[in-house]
View 1: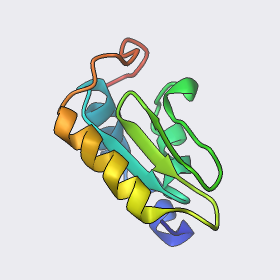
View 2 (view 1 turned 135 degrees about the vertical axis):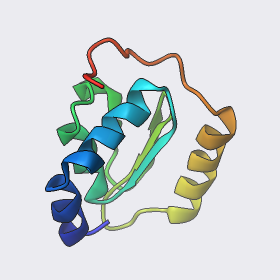
View 3 (view 1 turned 45 degrees about the vertical axis):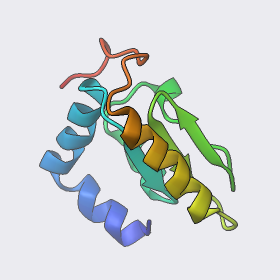
Length: 98
């Protein structure tokens, strides 16, 4: 989380490519706060990044939590479950350039 971190990653082409690669290879992806905006900028499909302000949201192994009252324990549980599943082949992968 944090705008400074997001700006640093946004400026790093390898980091942005890595996000797209992780998505394309059906790997779990987690983002907290401002980090969730970075997922939209990494060429992921718009409907691939679930965002529900203040709530943990999950869609096909992409787990986010945003807003000022975010539950990080719930995020950790949900992201842990996404990692345990290893791959998430129920994603639309064709549109991601990786």
